[in-house]
Image (cartoon, rainbow, N blue to C red; front, side):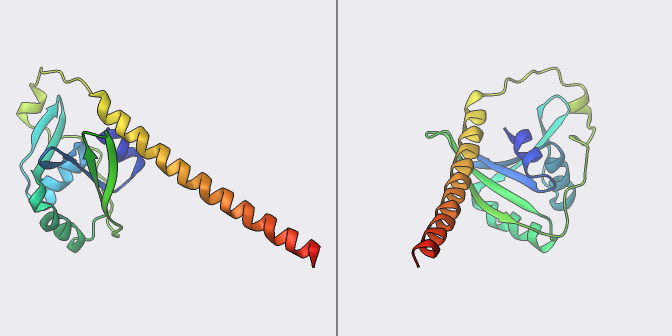
Length: 156
């Protein structure tokens, strides 16, 4: 899910709540480690992750905003299996890193395999569907407005 969100939000640092923590993975984790000094661990072979408690969100988003880095924060509701955008900031600095890890010994020697849970992909698809619905509604409103304007011109 996080990798798909990173592709969608190209250049922004993507953070998502999972349980009592906000997590960032891959190149975003590497950048947060370099910028803010957050501790890095492995989420799967050669992919880093960083996390911080929910109560520290404001602290870290303020630091990123001061450094003018673009970011987006998602909230994952495990009961509804839905994603919501909590906060977004459009700064002039983008994440241009390509490394998904910091080439540490732990990552390079990791043999543990991880499965991708389906509930995260489901939440992402629900978010996409909601956005598409909103776009369709706006498009219909625009067409309806044009239709009413043309109808009023004919009757006048």
